[in-house]
Image 1: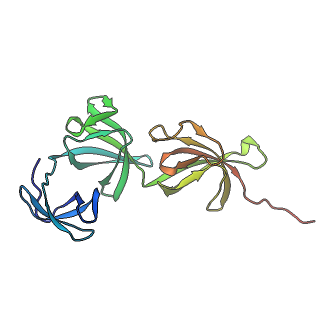
Image 2 (image 1 turned 135 degrees about the vertical axis):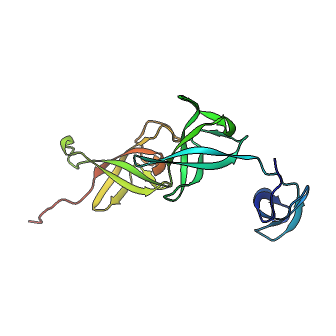
Length: 218
């Protein structure tokens, strides 16, 4: 552990506006009892503030079939596991990613580890994602089934039974396949009305074509 620098921002509870939940505080004067100011209400008070020792962690970021490598500073005693999400700064952008693999040795992967024991963390971008959508024809002719890829925010909600429009396509969602690394779902295919999956957790979306066909009133 180390002491913070003046001007550094740290999460602390505020005795004035947030005694139970941490808010962002600015360190005014570091020391054994640092003088800090709550950025929410301006309350100035003294707290013991220690910053965990950090090390650089190698991170591979994947998106749409391509990958880039970067490093992220993290507390060396922090415990991370598959499915955790965090922010990385890549040459392309600042992105939200989800951990899909943790490598602690040559060809040795684990579900959970301390940062200090990790060689490489494998991730995929989840703030903006590409989702595969299968479109079945109205009349049920399987040979006319086709697939498209849609780009949506990671927190976009796909809901069974709802109608969606993607460009010129209008479809009704019939089933959702969840990614293996997605948390808090009944894995497999969700096909009951009201079942919902966030885009970042969707492996494939099955739909029925709702686009209007040419017709005549006569």
